[in-house]
Image (tube, rainbow, N blue to C red; front, side):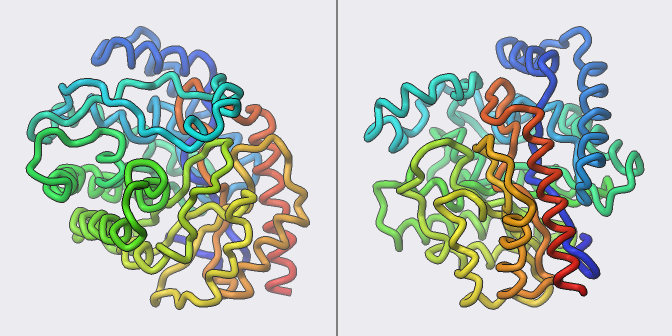
Length: 381
């Protein structure tokens, strides 16, 4: 995995805006699982080519396929694995809905239309590996298409899958998550074998504090996510750390985020995960101050960080000087070579949910790369 050896490299979190024809096809496929929709492959191929070019035009160094062929970043696995024939599970209540009903009403237009999240009611194993392989092949097709430093592909962590698709079958949550680890190991290794950097999506390590584990005290929550990290490390035990990065976040939602667990309370557990780099939000108003946390964190040998320096829920276009300042803050505490920068989260987390104007997304990325160039001039002058 490339790191910032002579300038600050730029990347993003994974999901990028999809064209409307692809959105329509993806939502239709959710309504008719397994259906072969006419024109799907051609539409997604066009979308991937377009989103790759947009990443290049914006100046991004480490790119991907934008997750154009997936309806979302997690629950697509329900159609590829056995065991997910259970009833639809209610989404955990958020602070927005309980404390701020007026805000919840305001945000209804931004709620994902992808609401089918069945429980696990049987043994988890591969049902449709061909679909997973096709996804990997599509992502790998980006390699060589553009002058990128690296190409990555995302895949949900075992703990993240369990957060969206809850257990009604295994004897314990730990047994369920480790079963997922054993199954997902195949996908993780196939991504790396295809020549891609594996990004493990692990929002469960942060945002589950104020959703499914909000009833727990902090120490019990820490024990829970420590188990999630153990399962993740079990799944990737045969993959070199330098072939992997991970993403942790507190949800890409336009809420108050006042219940977010502080980074300082979980950073030690996150750093116990095997991937060489960790991506996390660093631009939104709830977490922008947390660059200071890294003053007290000694990065394990070889590891580096990928802080978000642009907010992915706001239509403000950050000024490049602000981006530069944010990068300099991180570089001042962990060293310039240990910083690659990206966005706080994805811009297309769920097909059909648009929080940031598609055109503005690319303006924000251009501002990020300009700010990174400014920071590079200062750091390597």
